[in-house]
Image 1 (cartoon, rainbow, N blue to C red):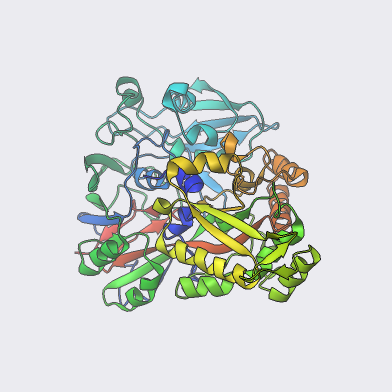
Image 2 (image 1 turned 30 degrees about the horizontal axis):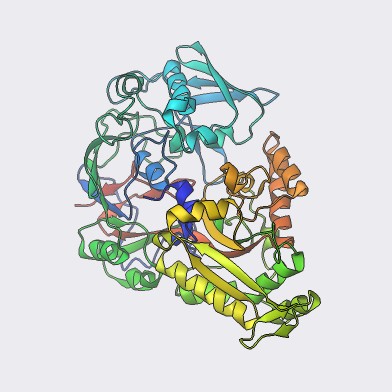
Length: 553
């Protein structure tokens, strides 16, 4: 299956195409439920809830796989040192308190003393050290967690339940990294005795979480069973004890129609990634509800290659952006359920720059003026603008296998809009194997993707000059902007939260001012929920949580 990285790099549809599009529903709100209460009532212990999603994890070790689905499903098994609240702040979880050194290079933690792994192994400072060493070990071949842990140096155990993590340099996103599933904790016994089986999925996926990994039928389903000893949820969790559910069953249904049919028929209690054109009808269906949460992170957008003509010129990029009515396309393609994006980050992301809203828009006259000013004033027989006998032509790369139908429709609408302005956009399909080398050498004008996450430092991954695609980054615009780099470098090291927000705001405003991308639409996670399923919640990344869920018989 496509991992976080392969989605990002191979797909013009990426995470946004997977159904993470936007509606105006507030984070965590239910809507149009056809009489189905999605929360409320007295929780009932026992029973089974079935959750259907579209893809199965490739590797069941969050220290290895970067896939979003790994983070979602294994959150049921693996806990973290801290928990991130929706507002971007952090609260205790397995660590009951922490202190950061003045130079930002040492994080000292005091751990809870009542936590155990589901194989009976105590959770202690040595367990934390063993896991962090597993993440950074070359043999682990981590595809994401080793990057997420940042400038990690070493873990110093100072007591049975106290430790200090030393960093090679200040890393302001460290608490966010520690809050993710990807830096969750395996039992040291499993690490020691079954290192080669951690990613296989099964009895060796042992954590401290509210569920245990019970069984797997490859390509079909997973079964998680309640951890009856669980009692260390973050303070913000409504359920402070063991999960109410006796079992959580996950089924893999790749087709949208199949997932929708499964939840409408009652075979599934909760269905992930609802197609936009079915939302309105599902809201009206008796016994069903739609649960929505705005998705933080980098919105779906078209990254304009600033490293080669014609998009190395600001006016050319401004003309492309002005020629496309992203608001109208978003409304048409997604049946009015999604909303347009204004900048590189989703509004639900901490440090989102509201100043980018309404700062640009569809303006075909302005596009024409800019193109004329650049010398692209003549038109050929097909109506495309030409200069010195050369057509104003752009190429958008994508991989059909990873591009959803709604995304393809959006791309085609952008193509049509640009044609009206006299700009040719070629949609160039490539297989996954061919795409990467073409992309890495910058042989394109446009690529498009989104990347979910609740830390604004994602901007570094996507826009810093040190994050070029060929070097393992995600700088789709091939940007080398010293001003952006300076702001991102300072934001990544300063402990001052207000200053970080200011710096990330500066970055967003400059990206919009310089038209390094064309923001398309915002992401929202939308779940179809049966009447009997209650208490499903979302974490800070808009991923569904089941520790507090219950079923009404």
